[in-house]
Length: 110
Image (spheres, rainbow, N blue to C red):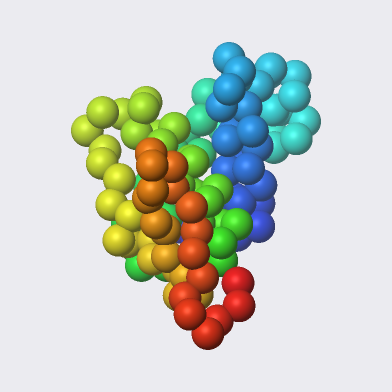
């Protein structure tokens, strides 16, 4: 399964609904041609695939995928996050005072 623009749209959509109970069936079906349960299954499959292979992501993709991994991880306690699999080439995540933030590598623009 390859990850394309449509898959990134699914990730964006599902992450945007995370603070709420979830998308309504009449929103998901016309937007993606799937029921909510099918959309959830596809979302989980996409995130799992991205998590399990080495990637070169830009900052926005990395942040989005990290949020998606947190959602999938909440839903499935046996999955664990390994941020080393997602190392973006142009920077790194730094945790300070309980928050994560992106820091570009010296001499590179993000």
